[in-house]
Image (cartoon, rainbow, N blue to C red):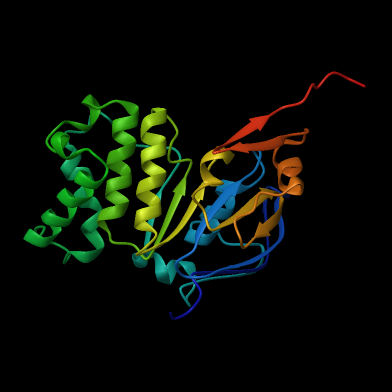
Length: 253
């Protein structure tokens, strides 16, 4: 199996002296599927960026696939929550996805036939194959998100990080995406940030709730403590085949 996918040891991080994460510790095994929940501003995206090596912790240590995050970046796929991309730039969907093959291509050389095959396969897997030649600016927000997921997929990552990948996507594709991620999990470790407890509770293998500190459960169970941390109000999970969220009356007692 090799080294753990991710090791986070006593990590803390602050922005301008404001503590964002405090004493975060957990280990993610290769082949795991981690769902991260928590309130806005609780530090979920910051934790993702620390594991990616985009940010460096103030304290503690992060190891990804046995290496420092920056040294493992060629083995990682990443789909950010917001993609800062000029929609007027004259590129097609297939051009965007081919960017995911840059680390596997020789600098200054054209993409190989294999690069193009992998890029087209990635587009097909997210249901965007028929739009391969479409200008990126002509696509809807949900369609563009699929293209950016395909770009990360084309790099053939060992770990796949996704930050709110269903933002701006229709509910049908949200369900389809998690089914796709579950299939992808056979070949890669998955880490996904999401607000949808109902979706992750039926797909992930482990779950973490982040709100400056972390509660981590290796068996994918969403506990009452996690719910209270994530939503800071009473929430019940009621399962009748499909999980539901029920919010009791919030009137003052």
